[in-house]
Structures are given as C-alpha cells and as structure tokens.
Image (cartoon, rainbow, N blue to C red; front, side):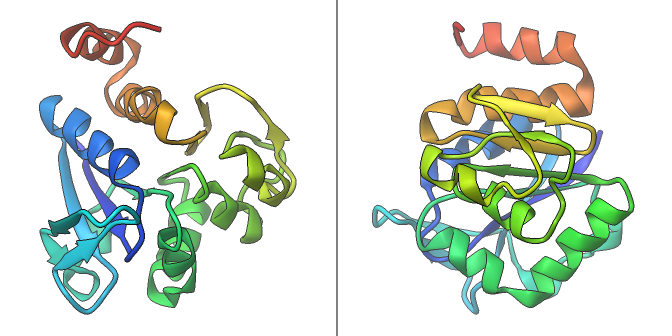
Length: 183
C-alpha cells in the first residue's frame, strides 16, 4: 500500500478533504491528515474543526508517495503561503511523485509551473490560474503524476481518481460500487 498526506490550512473545504481521507482509508491506503498551522485542530471554511494526525514539522516526506491539496478559501491561500509545503510540492513533481489538488488548489500547481502541457481541471473561477494546462471541464483528471479535481461536487470522483492511480481502475470501480457512487 501507498502512504499519502493531505494538508489542511485554516479555511479548507471539508468535503473535498475528508472524502479523500475516507475513500483512501476504506481502500486500505495510509493517509495522514496534516496541519500546516501551529495547532493540530484546523477549522474549515464552514466552521468545522477537525483534529489532524500530525503537524507539518512531524511529517517524514521521504516516506510519502503522494501529497494531496484540498481546496477552500482561505485554505488554498494558506497552503500556497506555506513555503515548507511548497518546497515539498515542487520536489514531488520534479521527482515524478504524485501530487493531487482539487477545487481552488490546482491553481497552486499552475502558479508553480507544474501544469505545463498537462490536462487539468479546477473550480471554474480558478481555471485561468491553470497556467500552461489544457483545461478540462470533467470532475477529475489524471495526467501522469498530477491529479486534479473540479470542486466539492467532484470530491468522490477526485477521491476515486486518486485510488485508481494508487491501486488501478478495478479497485476504483469496486470502491465506487461499495460506496454506491453512480456516475
């Protein structure tokens, strides 16, 4: 199994983040919820406070196979302002490791030049931030080591795309059936 981390800044979109955690844990993958704030409890853009597994300083990035960036405002801005996290995003992309982002968060990848020549999607008002990408209007896109999702309504397809990348199409289809997800 793979090991992933999903990063939470104040103002994250709870459905986008927790759906990914739920799907991956159901599938037997290890995913850690990581606070980029100075506290283990992080509050979403809609006032939902969740306790994280660890703080950013406690993460062993060398042991990770994937980084996940949920959207939400100002959560996305908080993620992008976290230089220690951005250094890891850059390193993961450079080394061909998987980076997934949904809603507003794919804009981070666009701003950092990681979407050049790739297919990607994001929340509609952030599509102009997908610099260098072929913008898609579908719920989720896998292009090499980059996975993007469109928004809260695409949280399940995004989570299933991550699972497909980690365990294959059959595993993602089985999970969709288990959770009664219909396309």
